[in-house]
Amino acid sequence: MLRVAAWTLVVLFPVTEVALSLFKRSRAKAAAGRDRGSLLLLWAAVAAGVTAGLLARGIPAGWLRVPGGIVEPTALALMLSGLAVRWWAIAVLGPYFTTNVAVEECQPVIQGGPYRFVRHSSYVGLLLALAGIGVMMASWLSLVVLLVPAALATLHRIRVEERALLATLGLSYADYCGRTRRLIPGVF
Image (cartoon, rainbow, N blue to C red; front, top):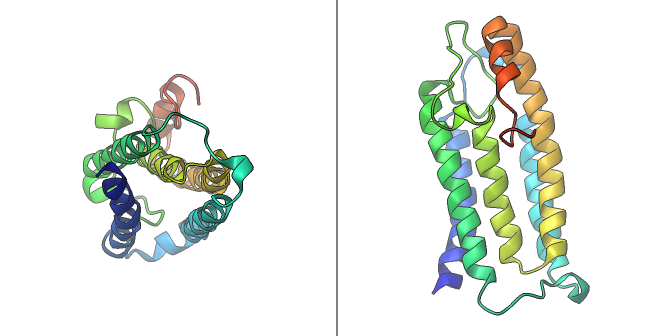
């Protein structure tokens, strides 16, 4: 039962991401220039990582050697917690959430909800969900080849977003950056 639930979530997760991309895209002309291809890079990194992870599943040296029955619940917990954090972050941003990089002049610095703890909460959720997919593959090698490209592309996207936020929101965003970490509370 848990295996079916976990694999169903693995399949539905990209559907939700495509829906987000279709419905939460900024139509502002300035957004195209600010994104700098970072969304496309992120999608490509995730797709390449998932593909490489699926291929790495077949390498016996990479298989997770853990007690039976622990893989699916762990994968499901990571995916569900990741999706919960991601959707919570998106809900808190409300109309200011876009899948491409777009910052409005009148936009406030959102500091509530998960943004109290980290500046890029939706990416934390994304990476947790992807970690769950990697664990579901029951291979530490799959987990690594899935997460590394996604994490690197996410870090690039964060730099692009932060440049746009600092350029538009100025000192209020710089102050927020000074007291709130990017992805891991108190660490990074």
